[in-house]
Length: 499
Image 1: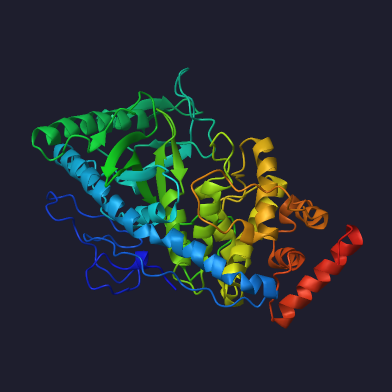
Image 2 (image 1 turned 90 degrees about the horizontal axis):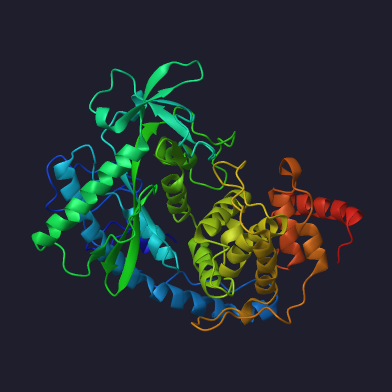
């Protein structure tokens, strides 16, 4: 069941497909600040309040698990009950931000106003914590005319060229109007080239932001307390603004972005849409987004492409996003470090859902809430046990690059939930629910720690084995059951597994 976040921001309560609404400019927008094409489309009205979440079907698992179905539903309903208010708060803060961006566009038309913010609202409402919302400000520049090359150190003070994917954007002589945003560099062959300098773009945007705040306050377009720019710092690759939305304060990280088409989207050979609506991967990655990595280098950003994929998942049958909501709530209330740090982030859980969608493409996997949650859990447990979470669009990148001790301490908490979910399915504001007393399963741990070299043990049959070990495997497809049984028998010969 697609969520109400996929509805057009209209007043009729209808739920059209994401592509059915027309792009609408914000009322009162300045001429020339045309909305950019979005996925989903932009709109000018408020997102409707969410309806009751999809009720999970009675589990076909063990009777104890079926009897606990009401706990899953109750916990999810509490989580969903807060989302309507989060939508309203986001809209209020977004109006303030758009007022600033429109003022900036009027002063400097090279900074465009992108009104297609449904994806950012979509993410903000799903996230249980107050993470920063990334806001891309497109540049009025022909991105397709720029040449992309690996970033080189232009001078001794250059930084950012060590980041994965960091690059320079060379500006051909035919491209004009960006002279004040350009700097001269030298290629490996000692050729002088003109490059788009992210540091200069950031500085210009920062100055305009500060000016726009002052001007809007003088014109009473902003009220005291509406906005704070106190976190703006020299040399930062984003421009953080604290904006009031209702009673909460929302942080927007404003970043300039260069967009250009990709003839061959970087999907590392995964051109098929396994588990996703047809054409989704190609559509989501059709445009490359380059954001600042330093004062001299840009980097490709997958922030919006990942959100587009997440939006597409919500159009599929089954409580997939409900599963993400539940795990996100657990992450924010029970899976934090004692000092409050987030070793596991919402971005990590988004990747887990996307991988689960590809690894479990059958609608049979997503028939009820418990089964859907366990599809995400087995993928998450595998990633924690191996301390490797591949980026969905760039699997060579490991997103678990943090403290290995924290990942090791997080694993028993996640396994405890997988083995005794009823103990954790409650909404609270106090101390995290402790995992003490939940006996670990050495056979499951042995399965999870199997070598992952060259993509081994990263397919449906392997994760079906993990589901069977957790006694939540109820697939009826004969071919798939046969593949799982064959692999399980093979693994039993290699490692001691309990029956």
